[in-house]
Length: 90
Image (cartoon, rainbow, N blue to C red):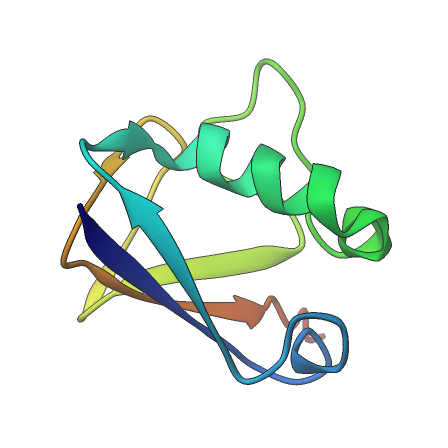
């Protein structure tokens, strides 16, 4: 089994720490990974919004390298993700 590494940006790092290692033996949809984080740490639900019809998470941006991921994208062993709080401007 190989781990997937998640880097958390502020203020998410207050709940999750700077980084999380997730042991995976096969790829999973990003939606499933985010739901598991929300189940393990309910405080994340204020930042990570997921509705069944959503194609991208609301409230956060998930990056793999320079690619912004959608909820259906597969993430797996060896991946390094960065999760950032989405900023809205005017």
